[in-house]
Length: 344
Ligand SMILES: Nc1nc2c(c(=O)[nH]1)N[C@H]1C(S)=C(S)[C@@H](COP(=O)(O)O)O[C@H]1N2
Ligand SMILES: [Mo]
Image (cartoon, rainbow, N blue to C red; front, side, top):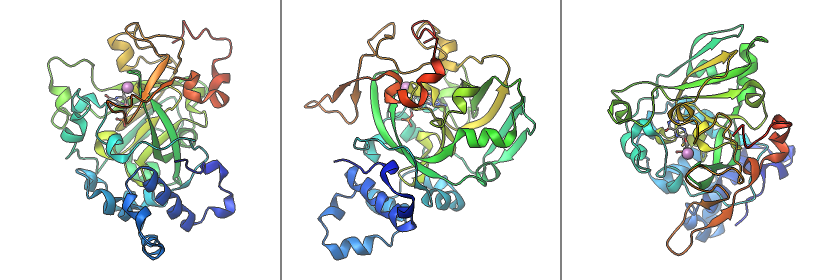
């Protein structure tokens, strides 16, 4: 089933009602609203008075940990308008997006984060802005988010492990946040850091941890200012579940998933290029750029194709991987003149 691309929606159509209708289409696409599709017209009309948040809860039940999001945030997320970017593909079902996760702080199995992040405390939350910028300091999440209207963007997420999903994120452009803090001309890179809290994050207590914590990632400032770079605070019209990186995470859809750092507590403007956690663990396998590229293999496997979730024993759902994950039009110019084989 195809979703109407948000970019196909005329501004005049962007009313609260169309937001609801789009949500309902999303729910239907995800198979969560299967019952709703079978309902007679009357039933459907009655449904539309539900807020998206309520609608999600109605079909999925209360999800563990989601109540850790404060009401103001649930509300703000529910008000999101359809954004500029859509995907001509079905979105990956909620149940997959929230149970097949990489969040090593909560364990290395795909099912660990959903289980172990259940009671992750993300309220209150603060974010520190540091480095070469006019305005720096520690801010409450509410103040970080206050000036930003939220939008919904449907992006492909391509993990370096060669699986992929399509996720309806709710958030706002990273560029809009960066501009507020007025980085100076010395700010050539942006570094992001995840919460360090071994009490809450069992993966950080492990003596065999694959990564050094806190998890960190970075972007070149022009990459960070690209219109596609997004700060996510929700999925599927609901506040971000803990396992997906509540309350605030990066989403950079043209790069491998590990660049999309979760549960951000610090954003720093730097003159020198930062080293990401995965790059630090093995720079041969995980580069700084990490642009999705079918022609540059991971040393241990090909990146030419990917498995689009959900897969089953009957359908591996394999498809060709696209350069920049299919976002060439938006980002290819950032890498003009670079050798993508060396700068992987
Ligand atoms: N802090 C932190 N952020 C992280 C990770 C992690 O282990 N820790 N995993 C990354 C990887 S490898 C991927 S593929 C995506 C997965 O996001 P999802 O679980 O929401 O699909 O998160 C990224 N962000
Ligand atoms: Mo990943």
